[in-house]
Image (cartoon, rainbow, N blue to C red; front, side, top):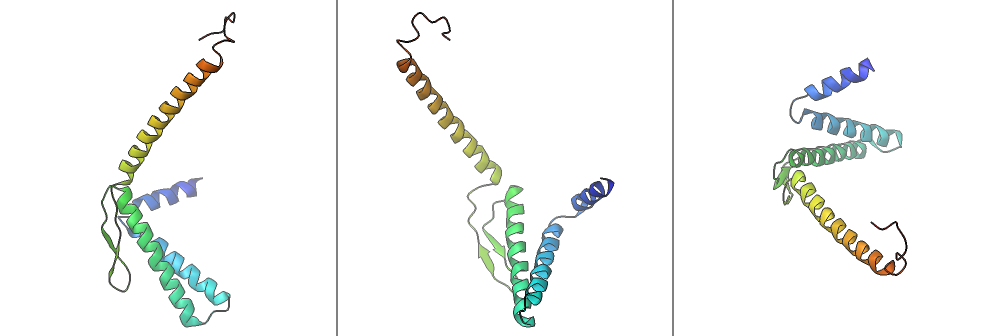
Length: 132
């Protein structure tokens, strides 16, 4: 457990997007080695690793920025250029909207269920002391 806490402390100490780069490099090297072990040639394996690196860095970097509250309109990709990403709002705003809609829907369903129960059990509750 001490080593796990030490690893967590080291990971939390990584500044900014350094963990994104480390994850991308690890994915790139992993795909490169897996392709080589799978019988692929050197150059195609290298480009597979490079693509995996770019994909992980792109997705993780954009996800990190959106999660922290930034509105992302584009993200750079390896080799130049930019990937256009339309982020309507932050993740926190999206979750709050989803929560409001779910609450409203649940309230509507509860009301309808209560009304249905009142209609169905209207006649059978007479003489029954277990009414609400």
